[in-house]
Amino acid sequence: MRNTHKTTSNHIEWFESLADMAAFAAANPSPKSSDKDDEDWSKSASLKDACTLAVHGWSEVRPEVDALADDLQDRINNVLADHYVVQHDVTGADVNIGLFMAGEPECMMQFVSEPQARMGRVVKVLVNGSTPWTVHASSIMKRGAAVITLVNTLHLMGVGVELWWESPIKGDGKCKYSTAVKLHDSSQALDIDNVMFALAHPSMLRRLTFSVQEQSPTAKAQHVGGGYGIPTEVGMNTLHEFDVVVERLSHNDDPTVRNGMGWIVDKVTGLGLIEA
Image (tube, rainbow, N blue to C red):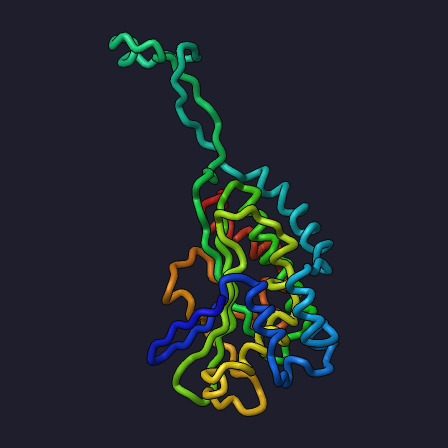
C-alpha cells in the first residue's frame, strides 16, 4: 500500500512493505534511469532484476555481516551489564522481614540476573538511504552491513526493532520529497535476510527508488533536471519518533564504512544497552 503525507515543505510517499514498493517500482510504464544499463553502479542487471531480488532475497553481504557480528559478540558478552531483580517464593536465600511479619508464605527472596535489555523495549530505527552518485556501490554495501549488524544485535539482545528506510531529496522546488518504506515491525519475527536488500543493495536507491520517483508528479515537480535530486535530511521523523537515525551516506569514508564495528558499539552504547 502506498501512502502520502504533504506539508508546505515536505512531501513523503511511503509504502507499508518492501514488497509493496517493489511491486509499484516494477509496474513503471516508462522507466528511465531506473532501468539503465549500469550494473557496476547499481549492482543489478535491470529494474526487473532488482525488483526480483527485493522480493525473493539477496544475501551477498552476509559474510561481512557475520564477521561483524562475530567480532561484536565478545564485546557485548563482556560489557553487557546484568542487573538483578528480586523474586519472592516460599524458599530463597534471604527473608523479607516485612512479609514474614505479615504472615506471607512467599516471604523468601532470591536475586535473579536479568539482561539489561529487557523484553518489551522497542527501538525505532530510521535509515537515510539517499547517497550522492559519487558514492561507490561497495560503500553502500559496507554501510548496509553495519546497519544490518546493528539491527540484528538489538534483536539478539531481546529488544524489539521497528525499521524504516527513507530516501529524501531536494531539487529546485521549495518542497522536500521523500520515498520511504517500513521494512520491519516490532511485532514480527525478524529475518535479517529479508531486510538485507533494502539496507545494503545499491539498487534499493538506484533502481527501485528511482522508479518510484519517475512515477511521482511531486518528485518531477522538484525540477531536478537529468538527476534524481540532492540527498538531504530525513522527513519521516516529523511523523514518528525514532531512537536511532542513520544519517545519509555522503562519502566513501563515512564512519559506517571505515569503522563499522565502532559505529555499532557507539549506537548500542548510546541506547543504554551496554556500558561504555
